[in-house]
Length: 426
Image (cartoon, helix red, strand yellow):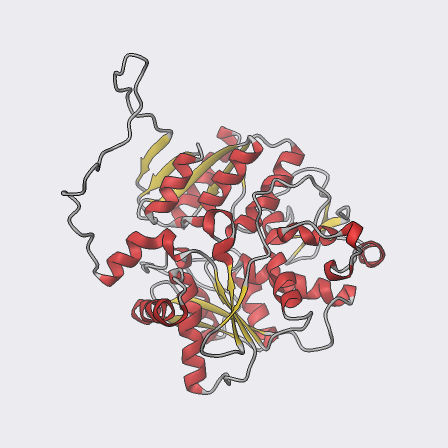
């Protein structure tokens, strides 16, 4: 595993030492990228499929340890998710991130970020989340023995709330959006002694998520597809993959060819990046009254919006937004005809693909990779609500009862919870 040469600001390109924990660029508040000595990396990092049997790559995303920071991993088996070919179009592939721990791609970034936090000796982490990053941080913090402080909108999918509480995190539900959660953490971090592990507010979640780029290229025989469709809330996965492509080219791991066109997919109910792209703007504006059942896309102002827009334009891709009705229809279509229950975010990608095939912007012969960023089963409550599907009356189910704890005398113990409460933004 390589030593980090330095951290580089994505805006002003100043170099920052990685010897101590860093958040954003001290000069301009830009997101920091991890950089390695590429000449040394070319000598030391072997492509995973070329390694000898006695040096077989580690399972999961740590098979790319040769291009990740030198750290003892906190791992739950993340990465190396399936690349599934569509049953209806052999050139269309679904990267099934639901197979990650906690059921989403967030496991990749949080595995590496928590690994580095433990390496630095950080004891308390905090994150604002639309849902899935919260569950992933709670899981990896529990595995690392680090305190996790979670701030989530009150209306997140119930599975996200449940898993955070089960993992022992300190959970606060906020009457607002992820932007309100982020503001609360920023206001309280210094006083509480939290290290803010928000999207692009530290450099290592990008490093974990860049492994999606390495994987999709390796799984396609070290060749680029024509296009990559990525559901975009904070957009770190898209940014990480673009960084991976840059590194692979520098290492000579990818066969000759043009990088894929990158597509960022959003809901029309929260489409700051799509709106900025359509207007030709360099950055997005705060998207007022954000509302979509694809909760992971409900990010009204991504911190890395300028980077995302630059990647889209450089790659010849675009940002699209789809109404929730089209997203739900695509979700149900893939469930019925492909046997896959997509997350609403993943269904934004499949709906966008169908739209671009219909308009002729893509051909069915183009090799395209769509990302399903999470398991549909984590969204059963919000999908059911979108479908207007009510739970059948369960009053007559035999043996239906709550599970309670009792002491040695058989007396019920009071319920225990570490939930912090509810905050309403002022």
